[in-house]
Length: 219
Length: 219
DNA sequence: CCGGAAATGGGTGCTGCCACGGATGCCACC
DNA sequence: GGTGGCATCCGTGGCAGCACCCATTTCCGG
Image 1: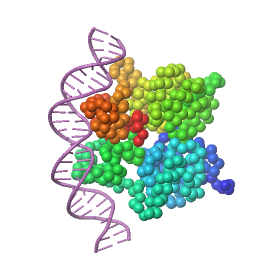
Image 2: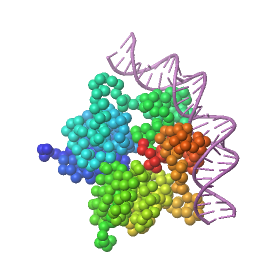
Image 3: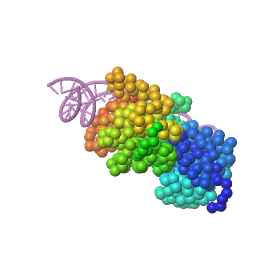
Image 4: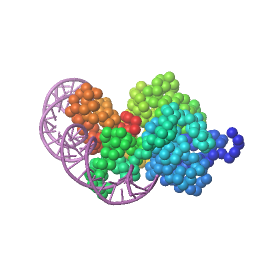
């Protein structure tokens, strides 16, 4: 590796402790340097405006703006910035969503520090780096489906559907949701049914888990 | 502070990345040294047997054995070992449960690294250290209730109830749970009703969130 | 030994969840 | 200028979730 300027990193995670730890890991590498820290998605976007960022390392679940949402916006605004999503969950759904959101990489928090550093370097080099364990298979599957022109998973929910899911996961009844959104109960149930079908789920408890994974709500 | 031998710490968290980061934070203090790392509660207990541990820093949500469960067992087996629980969630319920489980301290992952270090030191000195932000008030309330001899919150669920909650949160129907536990549907509903009343909740979606916070299930 | 909590089972009844049909208007993309 | 996704709404119906009543047995601690 040539001795060029180190990669400037924006680090976003809602847990200060985790942020601090990850920063220590990254800063100990000579070619990586964290130049900004954010505690949520909105703050991350704001910081990305005022700093020159090469790479954004975003936690998927954050208050205000999800890492996924921030990634979408960031990749729209400055496509040159590489994005690496940090996730607690080894979940197909989210992995695919991350790719669609413009992320170049997706790393589980269960990986070792070495892997994170390697992932950062690979993403910066714009290389399709090797994902830890099971994700390699998922990646291959995704690319195959894309090649075959199939409808890709991870297309997920419309804005309205996400809104309904969020309220369901908060424990609201269909009637309450209808009142809040000023639509009929029937429409709420229609949205719920559509979402359940899309995600291949059966009831509200599974939707709740989904919403938490997605960062739509806090547990 | 006198220059004595450093505090020997057992660190348990299911996310290797977080574990690594926290370890870097702790090890950078001369009076603190991490002598063992565990990826789940059961491993933590096993390591506590073979290492001389002054302090155990446990994540509340871990596979196999929850941090809470591990804390209970650990404080029973070796009461001299101090316990500090690390949590993602600022939640009364869990804070109280942590105290009951024998923990000397409860720290949110949203705190800064300085606070974690101070919490470790305070716990080792057996001092009632100042909890970050809102927890001070909670602590005071808890002590007041204890003084008045009131029924303490955090008594929480029986083993059987926790089992039912876990299955509910996994999306199982009452019928399925009844079959799995080889009891009648009525009993399952009885348990569910009791739990809902205890936790002051209304439906299964809220139970699901509770189960996730508790580390009973993975999201 | 007695009181209480935990676990088990039952009955009754309402309401909301969820599945299955159908329909309409809108808007974007090809 | 279709075609398809999105959002909106409607009816019908079954079963499950949840509330509120009841009971029994066991077991533990004061």
